[in-house]
Image 1: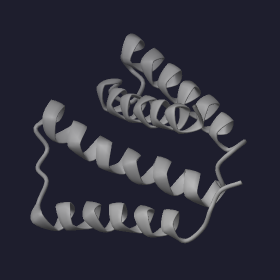
Image 2: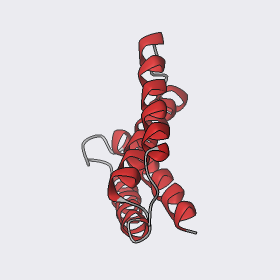
Image 3: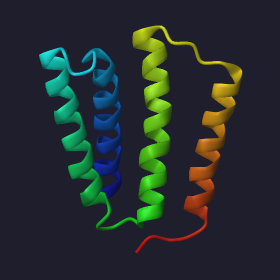
Image 4: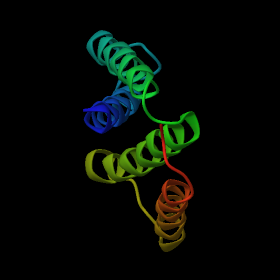
Length: 107
């Protein structure tokens, strides 16, 4: 259940970040409300995940997959370009998260 909560926290953070772009500097009401809901949900679920997963692992997974999700969302919804270097960087993030998970066991 903890890992499920973390995955929902990641999704909420990605949605909040994408809506941040749509809020146009918080000048559009509904996207701005979506930003607040997305980030509040993300932090609430992240805090629950921290009860059972080490903080370093949790934050690495949350931030790493948040970066990747936001980049892919930007490509899909805002026609932003992902270069080969961007893809290499995201691959390094994934490798780092995997290595961190192999390095220790959460309580």
